[in-house]
Length: 272
Image 1: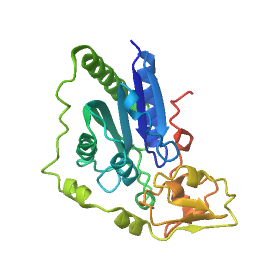
Image 2: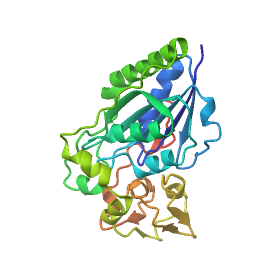
Image 3: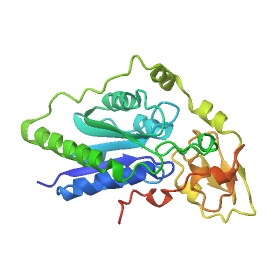
Image 4: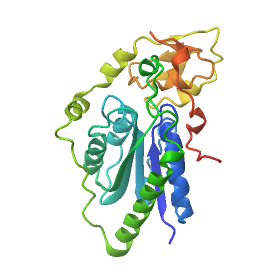
C-alpha cells in the first residue's frame, strides 16, 4: 500500500533540509508518496487532513524548536486523531525540544508515532568565531544509519496504525533534570532577536536576489528594494548565513556565516 505523507519543515541554513531530504528518500523507497513543504514559502495547510501521516522537522535554537515552526503549528487547523512524526537538528543542547513539539501537536489533535533528534554542525556565528566547530559536517553520512532506522520506524508505526487502528501515541519525555528544558520553555523570540542584534545590509554587495526573503521562516524580510527586517524576526541567523553575497551582518562580520548546506534549503537528498 502506498501511504501519503506530508512533511512540513523549517531549515535556517540547510542542515534540517538535508536531513528532511534523506528521510523523504527512505520513505519513498518504501513506496510512500511524500510531499515536502518548507514553511518559509510553502505554507499550504488546506489539505493537511488528507494525508495518512504528517511530519514536522526543524532546528533547535535557544534550547527549543525554532519559533518559526512552533508559530506555524499554533496556526494549523485542528485535526482529529491524525498521526505525526517529529525530528530536530541540534548543535548544542536539545533539552525538551521534542517534547515541546509533541505537546503543541497534541493540542491540534495529532498523535506522535515517532520522534528523533539529530546532530548538526553549529551554525551560530558567535560559536564559530573561535574556529572550534562541534559536529563539523553533520548531518552527513555518519547519520545515515540513524536516518534509515528512524524512517523504518515511521513506516512500521504507520503500517500498524492503518492495519490495526490507532494505538497510544509515542510518549515523548520531558527532561525534568535538564535546566535548559525550563529555559527553552520560557524563551522568547524577542530575546533571540536581541542577541542577534541590528541587521545591516551592505548595498555594495547585495544583488537583491531575494533568497533571504524566500527562506525566512518568520517572514520577517521584505525587499524594498534592499532587504528590510521586521520585528517578526526570531533571531535564527538564517538570512546572515545563506546570503550568497555575504551582504548581511550584525555585530558579527559575514565571514563567519555557515553556508555548507545552503543547496539543501529545499530538502534535496544527497545526489539529487
